[in-house]
Image (cartoon, rainbow, N blue to C red; front, side):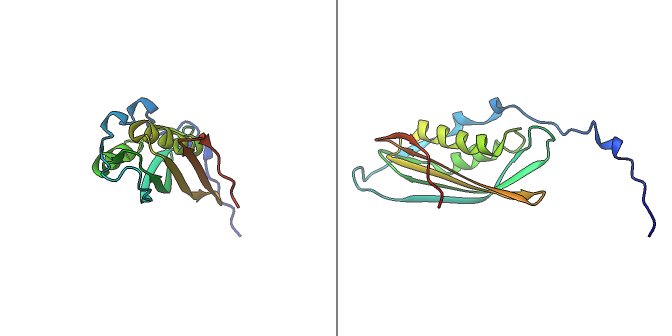
Length: 147
């Protein structure tokens, strides 16, 4: 078997452009009135196109994210949500932080009765991550027991 000599030192200083969290388009989030306040309705918005980047290497992180909520008086306007989620594309942010950030931003804009963000991050190096964060208006923020 022939041994291949690869010069790994050329990778040491490679880093893709990474944006800070201040480029996340929170101001673009809009709501529309919920015409059935008091009638609990489960809203579920899945996407498999979420990306952000590793804050160390700039390499992409991909996730399937589901936003689930029971509206209070406002619904999240879908186009604004698409722009908001896409604005994470080049942000250097840890997976756990991105998931929590999405929850905090969406709760702030739509004041739901209940909201859950569930993120399935694609495996890198053989390890994938599932992150679940929840908000309950009556109890404030709660963490979910994963079974």
